[in-house]
Image: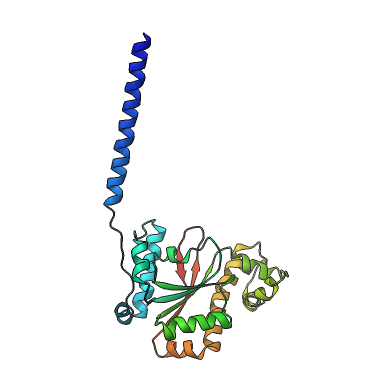
Length: 246
């Protein structure tokens, strides 16, 4: 083959690749432009009209979408602009700081939909109780979810009686749940036993809800009046599923 023909062949191949790349890029752009982004946000009217039961069902439905990799496409800049002057979240979620537990994504929620309070071991203290009182009594949220999760490092550390700086004081808030779980558990009560760890995690969720009712007259009154529902939940790291506790 002559040098001239080789050059022509190289030019032809280059043009073919460029054309294919442009076609793919155009197709990708067209596909992305056809995705409708939601810019809906919770309004004061929405918050007033929705019931605690509907909110809980919405959280469950959102989690199902998360598990199925079917999250709602959102126009986040539009939601940011729409919530600049006010917020009307439907729920507050008290969760662990664990990086594997992305709370808003887990429930398929956008900007302004939910309050999230996070602390290792998802317990309540004066600050989180005050934040939850604000979320419910002042800002109007109607559901409080306390959510633990599988393989919780804070729970494991509490089981192991870890002592280290301020972590020691933090773990002391979880220790009552460990002791309560030990009273009824039959088997290996160590942090290497996943079943026991899960048992403590769920016990800690229930203990936290109990503490909330005892230590916050505001939240307990809202619950008695049917204005707020408090629910416990467990997040499965393996599946992404949230299981609501009885």
